[in-house]
Length: 136
Ligand code: AMP
Ligand code: ZN
Image (cartoon, rainbow, N blue to C red; front, side, top):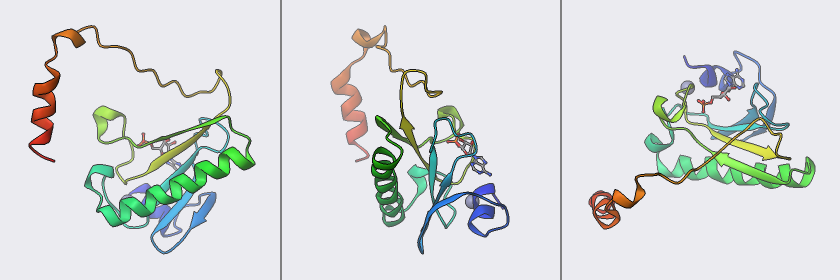
């Protein structure tokens, strides 16, 4: 049984922030910033891209509420909401979860940087869009 399923079943402890029939949220042990929270469906799905829409929507609804609470109660200046899909994207626990990470200042332990791709001018954007559209 995966670590988050064990938390759902109460077999290992977690500091819970929220719970309903389908979703729980608890503080991430890493506490990347103060209040870093994970929102998790009670039923096991490996990652966001494999989660049924109704459950995914329930999880995102709670993630939004937690982000709002972080702004209001922890006085965060911003919030990052992110979910890693598969190892190449940094996923380490293969039970869908959304990170809700309050941000305070430039010394936060989360560094998210999106740089311009040096090869971007060689990319055929209409062709890439066309590829994606075939599966949407
Ligand atoms: P990810 O890399 O997106 O799969 O993130 C997994 C997250 O789960 C990490 O930020 C860990 O710190 C967190 N984590 C792992 N085990 C536990 C646990 N027992 N309680 C709370 N958070 C955990
Ligand atoms: Zn699980």
